[in-house]
Image (cartoon, rainbow, N blue to C red; front, side, top):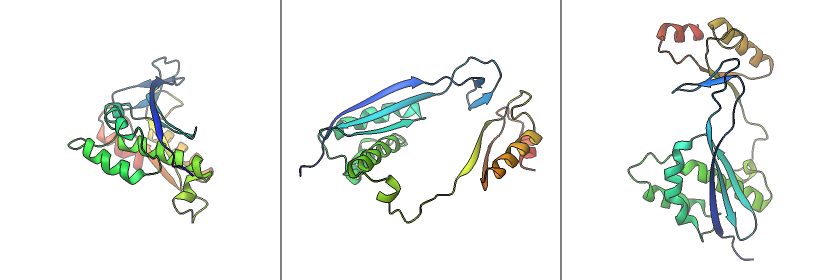
Length: 186
């Protein structure tokens, strides 16, 4: 049996519009009727001679220059050799934050799961069938019915607890009001 080989890497930038949301320099928040659009995304596809494609959608479009820098080193290589990729990427991206490694690594894991016809959790050891999860919010907003007050954050947290979430991650407002941020937690 021959080893799989990476033949091509495609990166696609796109935006998925979110209804009733607006964006700031910090994040996304609820705003009825807004038409500012959603976040920019990167779609990564790693094609192989086996016809299997490793895929990932990254919510970090700023990683594109780093992915562009490391992608050529992968052409002709075995996509199952993730340690080689990681070691090479660290060298190529020296003196950078190396955020471009993660999206490519996840696409390589996606390939491995498809290649071995196993879920990735099993490839990673698979001793647990379930993993703990937590609920998370968008940034707070000023719209009634959204997350415009500490009470609305608390109500949403209670709804999440009723759904079975044991943890809750808060993204407060982005206006710099520290006292208001503290009030969410209290």
